[in-house]
Amino acid sequence: MRPFDGRGQVALWEITEDLEDLQRAFRGSPADLAAYQEIHHPQKQREFLASRILIQTLVESVGETYHGIRKDSYDKPFLHNTNSHFSLSHSLRFAAVVWHPTARVGLDIEPVSEKLAIVAHKYLSEQEYAHANRKLRKLGVYWTAKEALYKLYGEKKLSFKGNIPIEPFQEKDTQIQGWVKTESEEKRYTLEVIEVEDCILTVVAE
Image (cartoon, rainbow, N blue to C red):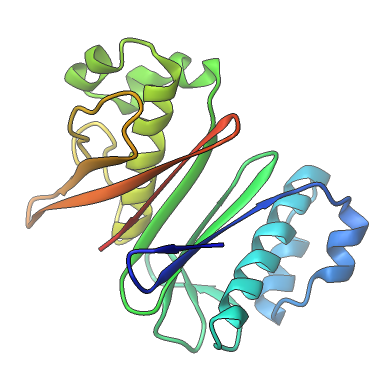
């Protein structure tokens, strides 16, 4: 667990437990349990349980009571019965969560792999594609930054290419700048980039 944006917290968990251990540790709400029962792939079940246990642990560590996760009319998850905010993400190896008492937040974690290069044309503008130059770490930063901003905004579908531009950055930068641009507003954000072994984690607060 580490501080973020003054009053927030970021937590990371390497998922090494087997499914049975996670099931025993899971103390989610009825809504969490219902969501879990809709998942049938064992690896997806492990990722779901780890992420829910992690957000519950984080929320309780800051003195709040965890009442489960619900979804709003835009299908954005929120913490039930509290005014604080969170965002979570998981990969095969890690679960990651950001929590903040007052600000909307977004977080994403992604392994650095060739898959990022294969689908880069789908999420990068021409300028971003040229800037990334097929370097996998840069592509990971672009993907996770856009995903984090998409989760923060949370109100309707945005185009990764058109609505969420990321300003050029150096390959090892730990802070970058990104935008959410819609017909009604344009807002610039500072995002924090964290390397986690073979993954990139990017997090942002409003």
